[in-house]
Image 1 (tube, rainbow, N blue to C red):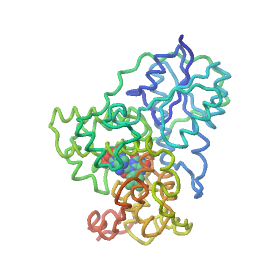
Image 2: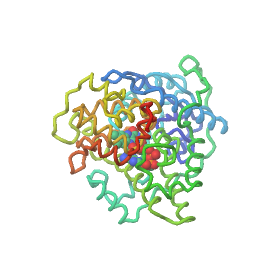
Image 3: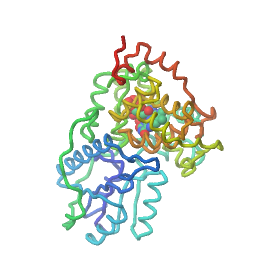
Image 4: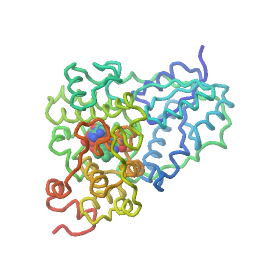
Length: 421
Ligand SMILES: Cc1cc2nc3c(=O)[nH]c(=O)nc-3n(C[C@H](O)[C@H](O)[C@H](O)COP(=O)(O)OP(=O)(O)OC[C@H]3O[C@@H](n4cnc5c(N)ncnc54)[C@H](O)[C@@H]3O)c2cc1C
């Protein structure tokens, strides 16, 4: 029997290759697509700064604007709400007489608790795992027994010849939205500011991916990926991946098609390799769950005591260590930082300033335009030696990193506002 389904967009702000949304469209006679700006993410972290900073907010606003536009082109719409999901769903149940919710599955403790809570209120939530490049069902091991070490994880997959899951077929027609009286609860609809390093949204994501491959940038990816400056040294797919404006399967599909036209090379292999890291941190959540979120992580090392003064020096780029300060200022000003500098500033906070790694991770959550719960937690645990890495931590030598990656001081000069001569 067909029924009214509420589709809850979470970190999947797209129509293409969105199996959860496609299923909802196939199974509903009426569909209510919604997005909830949640009170919890609008709050301050325990270290006293907003959980979601201005760059991610703006990117999100742009992404929702595009999603609304995309849905509109199919005769549908997107209802944006502000509040606690449980309250919003109660209002929607009153209005639609439906307690059916479809959404993507997010396997992190806060998001799991939220879904559990809503289920306990009598809703039927059907959630779909869809944010990895590989299909978990195809893996050569059960997720609960996945290899702890990345290299073994990768080798097992490559030995099996496992490729990305095929992107889902294009959309069916989107069922109509029922008549609702929700004006009071809805987010005011204003056009987003279009400035910023990246523009959020599915159309922008697909255009960016196309440009990246059309320009052949992937060929030099392995050589350039550790650089610090510019738009082209790495793919910059992460902001769109994090909010789900595109899927990693669509990227992998384009990567394979690029290889079949131009040949595989070190660059194309390395991009696949990095996308595997993304999956690896996702899958680790199925194995270790909430234990990745306790203060000690998977280790038994005590946690450093939090020092507010030192934290302010680090987070505002005023440590006196030029490379760190330049990186932290770039992060605050743009919402982005190269992978190399993310590693170096995280290491500096943990090992040189004896900082509490959780405050560092929370600062990245606040600042990064591409904040992704799995990748952020996974990488911080890895650097802090509290994850599954047998090396027990990854301290970086700032002097060496400076010599290797900014020998002429151009990067430091740009962000510290000084001449590099
Ligand atoms: C302390 C720390 C925190 C991080 N927090 C995040 C985060 O919140 N969100 C996020 O997307 N990435 C995070 N990363 C991983 C990585 O730095 C970014 O994915 C990458 O810099 C994004 O730029 P890009 O898209 O140009 O990457 P590219 O180098 O072009 O890589 C292509 C894609 O591969 C994936 N990828 C690459 N490196 C990693 C990695 N180490 N871990 C997981 N996936 C990877 C990303 O999806 C990326 O978009 C973090 C790394 C560190 C060291």
